[in-house]
Amino acid sequence: AETKPEVAYAKALCGECPMKAKCLSGALSRKEPCGVWGGELFEDGKVIQEKRAPGRPRISEIQVPEIAEVEEVAVASRVA
Image (cartoon, rainbow, N blue to C red; front, side, top):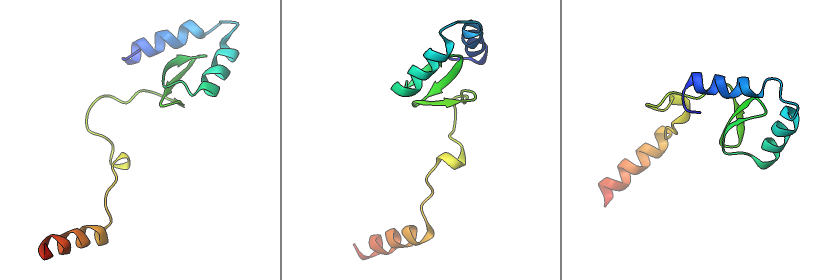
């Protein structure tokens, strides 16, 4: 499932399934990389609330170098 409606539909299919709990348990133990398992959405082996839309990553997902690291690189490039 790629879009929100597709994810919602996939989760709805799990609604009354008698294997829902076992499916979720198995997906957690296998660390399923993606998809809807046991009524939950997985990404990178973890349950997530919703898929993020394509585009730029969130600031929290970007590793911003410390100022000291930036200064070290600047000094090193001037020396070289």
